Image (tube, rainbow, N blue to C red; front, side):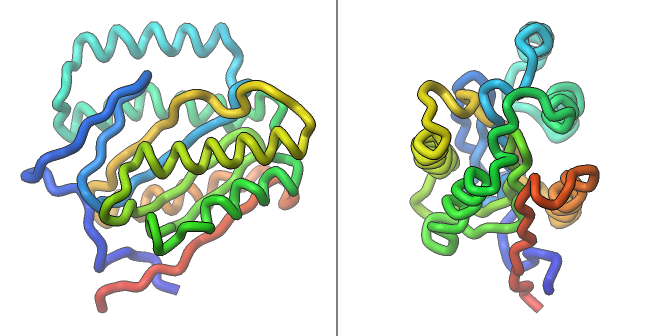
Amino acid sequence: MSESPLSTPFLNPFEEIHRHRHHLPHWQQGEAWQFVTWRLADSIPKTELDQWAAQKAVWLELHPEPWDEVTELDYHRQFSRRMDEWLDAGHGSCALCDPDCASIVAAALLHFDSQRYRLGPLVVMPNHVHVLFQPLAGWRLDQVVHSWKSYTAKEINKRLNRFGALWQEDYWDQIIRREQHWQACRRYILLNPAKLPPQTYILQDRELASSG
């Protein structure tokens, strides 16, 4: 299996970046690879989330966009990494421990592979999802992620006979800057479930063709 998307694009610092902001900044540049994470709505205690949001608001005020690479990495070090640590602690209902619920998410990710996007490695954890993928021409990052979250929320709520918000409203994303960054994200996905019993996650390491 090839471990590298050598024939595919990464971030080009000299080309325009499309910036979309909801509660978090979202950047897309054409078909450049993206590393995206989203979580269940109850996966982080409210007191910790409020503190995190307040600190992030101050940081964003002091670091207006556009960011250079060093600033973006600092953002992810201070905020994305802390969020990942909370998620891995297993707070909340962890509805995705249900194999059927996890399978709904995995099937949704796979459904439009090679049509709307090109999938890399992905993991469905008990209370969150990580996926490395390349949006294809004509598809925006927010469109793709919204379709995943909307469909899976409806199907999982039906499966669990529940109502209300399943997923946190927003999501986290990083544009992949180079092959080493892609490999680091792949390793993170593959190692993320290391401490969990096999039945509590779905992991797929999608095969990618190199340019060789």
